[in-house]
Image (cartoon, rainbow, N blue to C red; front, top):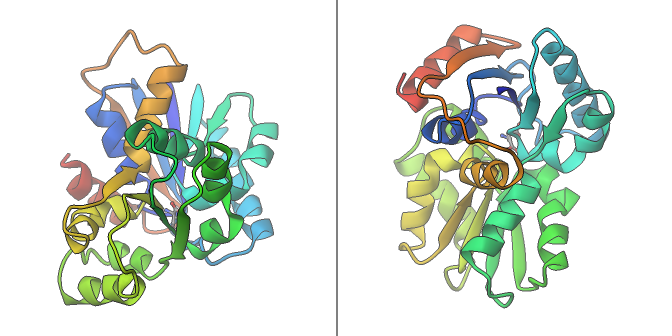
Length: 248
Ligand code: DGL
């Protein structure tokens, strides 16, 4: 199976990493809209327009499935993207909700959702979790973490003070934290340590693998996956980041 993976920037590479670890696809074509990242501060119409342009980009390739490895896009544009596509389009929000349910079945669990401003505003995770009976939810828009990850600051003072800025008021560690932005797995260790390892972290990449394995037939696994990386600006930069993150 050939899959397209779309994100606003480099964050979706964290999803590609999980796909590669599970040898699911013969070919992965990645497109990061690096010229226009971040999407998380934009309004719904803009997010939908940009996402439909990504659909046009993927029409240059024969893909069997498109994964929107961006929570912001998944929260706003999936319906419109599906209408413009002749293959399946899956997002990361529903798989994230299901992964949370598999990891922490207790509906009384205290769950913290992290995401961009747009993702938090959409209420997509909250609605999904509420429908499964989870009610002890809070959400924080942690948009500053996006440029921090893009800058490669996976540890150190800037990251620590930003975590403190967002989490300093919390009185106790959540039972689970949804990393509702595909940039955040890159700083998962720092978030985990901040909460002294007391919180279970839900990662879009692992969640989508769980979802794919439950919904598609992957009896055939691929030892080698062909990878193609494209970006709307500075594709060389994106390929460099891919090499580093994916250890290519
Ligand atoms: N990677 C995007 C997401 O998962 C966030 C980055 C952005 O704001 O574009 O929501």
